[in-house]
Length: 429
Image (tube, rainbow, N blue to C red; front, side, top):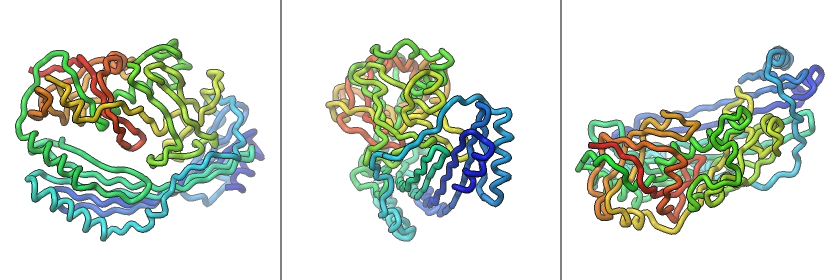
């Protein structure tokens, strides 16, 4: 990396070298039978150069010819976008536990036996099709630049999930755990899935109208992804974001706070620096309903006259950094999920949705189908809902929050509780 960087700096004003390597394994059970046992290894290295105020990028998976990679990056910069930044010198970083050595003790044989045992546990209690997955990986990422930054980190990740499939459909009930160390679904989680599966044997089309809806953590991504599209610095720079003049103003219910915590010990994506070598930081995006901040990388921090927040992440070594949030945490509330359900006289609880990519996402509009959800009547789940849509707008929906669950679940890069919202437009019969 150092030789590659020095070659690049002979012709470019600034340069950085970024690398990532990953080793991953997956076990997949379909309908109770082991269907897949895969392993993969990947490595990539990228050279970013800034010459004459323009950026160029070249990447490879096999660094055989350093000079050729430098020449490719310089050629890319000839027609690259303008980039007026100074690459950072980063030395002192917060301590982040992103790697758990226990991941090295994982045994495929032990996981297969565990999967078979848990599938048998479910099969004794239900006739559902049971799918199980185990995935685990280790990674290493590093960056070096001409300003003197030289950083690297190790990471580990483990995820396991169970899926009970509704007959004749592609949807079902899902539960999982995710972290940096080996984890297992417990029998209480599986008992809950079985209980819901039994209720799902009864189906109904809910009435059309404005009803209270509980969004479980699994279903909330479609709402928060709309917020982060609006909070993108690109859309602020282009002056198309509906949040452009809203900083310091109330945009959601005071029960909603959305934060970024890149140091969270229970989240697998925690890291101390981003894909540009900028230190990450905690950040309040929404505090008790008040819009506070947006994530920035070096490029858009400069363009907007803001401080970089350490959110310049790369989707892969083949991509330039872009501003993306990390470890999104929604503050929990005061009610348990059971208490939230009991408070609803007539409404829905949704576990998964279809069509979250549709509608005017930038504006916060949505129209989504309920893939997996239940009708609530007199505080109890009575049937699985079918053939219904939810529609509305992000800001209206999160402005009508009745309750937030007291426990937040870690789901990938999100840590979120269930949220009960009032008067959601439900289209059924």
